[in-house]
Image (cartoon, rainbow, N blue to C red; front, side, top):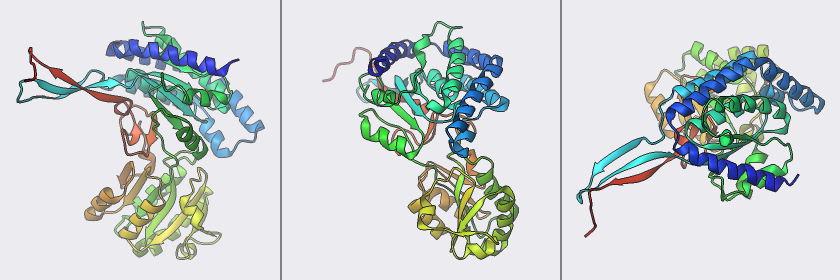
Length: 419
């Protein structure tokens, strides 16, 4: 197969579909999303069987436990995908929305209209639920999408895409609105990155190697994040029970996700109270601890020494680095130096410090008294997310409908000419 021609054919078809989607009604797009959700539920057994084949292959290839965890589907995750599509369908439609319409001294009225970007290319690894989430958001926002999932999830992704196509068949919308690259040839990624004539934005979701490759090889605008090095800072004025619950949940609720905590920072004044209890909790959960010299004896036996590299590592595994800091200023300095601008949390009852943390921590999501695991499009009411951006331009944090659209100026006149 000529993979370059195959990818170009997908892109040309997507461009045609995008033209139709831009003029489609909200009712049409919502109907396709709801029908897709219904198809996912009906096909649950087929989806889980396809996923079983992917898991077996992952085990044979000795892929990491974290990657296999991200790859796995169960009935709950299938239902979550379906609910996600329904939540996206229920969101207000931004396409065509007019805002900021103001009269000017000349008599013209100037405003902004929200419009789709056009064709979105999404390159992702491991997590098959991205297929449903990303396609749903792109369809709702009037964009056509080309998805290139990881070869390790090919069977799962194909089964999910079939459900989405089933949903589109219930409407007059083009089936090419949602396309999945059906081949595992790695050259498909390079071919997609070269299609700047047809593709308006690339969203890479994966490890540092993928993100760096995409940024190096394409002229298409990229919306991405390199890593999720997330922090929880336990302040001197943290409620002990809240601190314990949040610090444990942020690390152990799920390991192989980008919003899991990777570094715990504890104020010196709270360390002797909190760290012994946290050490016991993490040991019980099977988490390996690597800590600074002050934290190690407080956490108990079997704690390794944290290296400089640990502060910049996204483990995606039951490993956690721990550091005792003097207070708020040192915590913020550590986060802004070592973090990846993804999601960072403070636990405190001191409102002044909470607001200072919110202002000074330079991340896409900054949380007060809530686990970093909430840094997610579904939890933020976006229905789902196409990705989480640590960039500062266009979109930041979990990217939903607004991040998949832009605004154009519109001008309303009554025969006006410029003098």
